[in-house]
Length: 276
Image 1 (cartoon, helix red, strand yellow):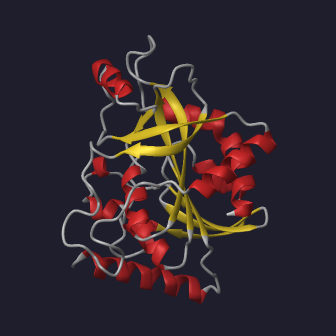
Image 2 (cartoon, helix red, strand yellow):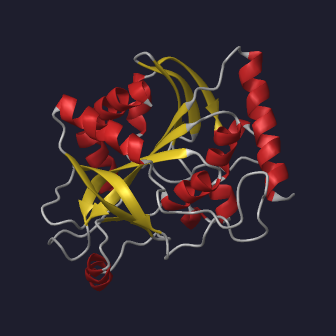
């Protein structure tokens, strides 16, 4: 099955499920990264669709990813939340990694907030910090646009000057200011994983101007930009990158950091998306 037909199949099945339950697709979506799934617990009267209930839909296998759509409202704002994503390191082709966000965009979502857990490299960063993504480096992972262009989705050679929408950045800054949340800013780079980086790699990446590193988000942002969708991003600093502290890195740290930062992430997103 080609990529577009697979997208259309999942889209039709999800649309049918929502229609049968009189659920409308919201215009704002939030993709929750590792350790941040509890943000979805703040949805009032949620309607839930498990990824496993949709044919040909990639299912999350990463720890801390429940693998489901949660549809409802964060306070008064209608939203659809992806409570978990799939990653390239799980063995999925890149077209499957970005399939969920492509489906939501085709179904009417106009603005996305992509969140993730990341290793902090910026001087002074601490575990639990939140960083707004102002730009990214995609050079270390395959592009989701490799292969025949899907003209129905976007241009063959999409511009990437402003992947992260400037207006949405301003709204995140304003929300952080109103809530007195320290929101850092910087550049995110995606790597394939699942291994963490070496100390020497981290020193190289710092010289390239990278502030945080992770294993997701960038390819989703590229796929959405290709479709002309507005994108914003927020990273949770779940650990300090290799070689920058005496601590060895562990996947459990991500969950612990999510517990620390979850309430602030929820408050920030709830306040910001009111104006999306």
